[in-house]
Image (tube, rainbow, N blue to C red; front, top):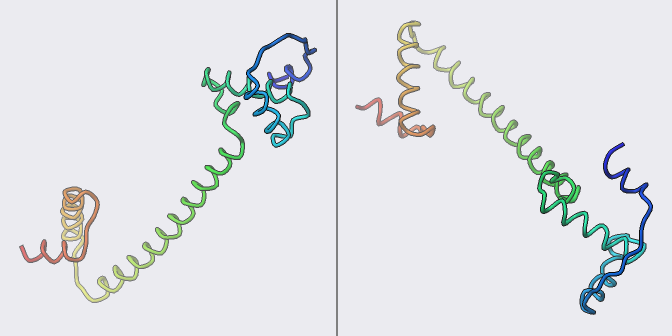
Length: 140
């Protein structure tokens, strides 16, 4: 049984507390919006939330599920878009490579040497390599 289930099965005890009228007005205004049946339930949820916030060991306890699921959906959507774009880019590169391979007579040793030089050049440019970079490189 997890902590939440144990907490729900506990017998509640009454105790006296003091609140400013403005705080009680805030509780009265918000407890129904949070689907709470009473002030007490709202205050209890607020205490559990704040305790989770302070301990930060159980982030799921105070981060609403909506926030975590929304963030997950955003990341998943971004991953899908990036994967689609990488696939499209790979297809275009395959086309260019096949066109060049069909029209040029390049021996395997020259190809490996070129690959090594390209790795160095792309690293030097921080991962960005444009057609203009290739022209400048080929012209000296």
